[in-house]
Length: 486
Figure 1 (cartoon, helix red, strand yellow):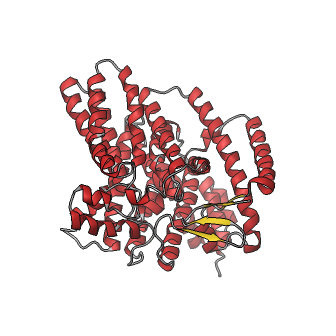
Figure 2: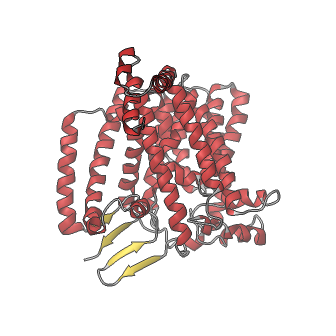
Figure 3: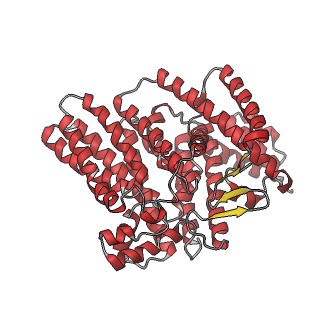
């Protein structure tokens, strides 16, 4: 008898919802086939959903490892900006001359320090460097688990693994960029700080100094992590902790002070002109990606009154009309993936680019209303508030991303927000379904990075092309705004 896969899947789905023997009658197949399918369905049904989620993310990590091992053999995306500066470090050593001769990158020298050190034990090929990045990912997931476990005793590791369910996480996990090494030291600094706040005075002082040095190392990896410093002042309210907080801040600024003094700014001299100015639209865009990630991880965050959603729809409509006739702001999220998969027909592309900015405004409106409601409803301890403030401040630093914006910038902040909402995340089959969707988008996004950047000619960071015909400026980036000048 010929098996019909679609019907079999449908019947199997029935068994996943119920183990009633009467459902056997639905199967028009021989008894042996019925028995196999029923036993499989009952077996799946008996497994706890948490175990299935653990299995799913384990397979995700293995698949990511496979993607890295089969990734392009040449440097792609921002790797092409970062790698040449390792040669600059070899030439000048750890000196002011090296810091002032960093070309084509906004992040600090941490990336070069790490990979130059590793060059003594392994060849710095693109795939080797991406494997190192993968090792950082595994370490970071463990550190994230430790941070979450302070407040969530059950399923803390599972919640940490939800990092992989955020689509933007895949592009920084499968490419040797600066985010993973920076996460490593920022998470370490948070762990040392958390323990310093819990220990007696002598141990607290030592842990604060180490934590501060780790925070400073993260800052010279990516300068937005300067935003870790202001919220630390919250802990001055804790009795007997003023000295350890002071030491944490002082030692956190030690390495950045040297680097920023050499640069006479927060970024290398080579890109200071590119990174001048502000882009308020990038902040809205960053919070839109933040909201998308939260829908996947914890949609209950958006449980607010319906009236706010009606207001958001009205905001979207009015802003779309204003944009079409006056502002002429155009944007397409996940541009590379959408173009690769031809999700939007070319004939509709320009219209869609006018719609998305309005949608972004509506989504951000809902996000902040939901955040306010969540804060009021969940009055948590000072550590959770600390995590929230760090995440929001780092997102706001995208206002200075004048050269270009990519969705991976959001991932600098989202792990801290994940710690903040961890206690309320529901572990159920719907979470697994959302995780599958998020991972699928992430894999497609990473593959599009591999394919597109492997085929594109190299363009230094911040290069700008002007289309004289229509006056539209396009900033080179994976995701970019285009603003028509009238």
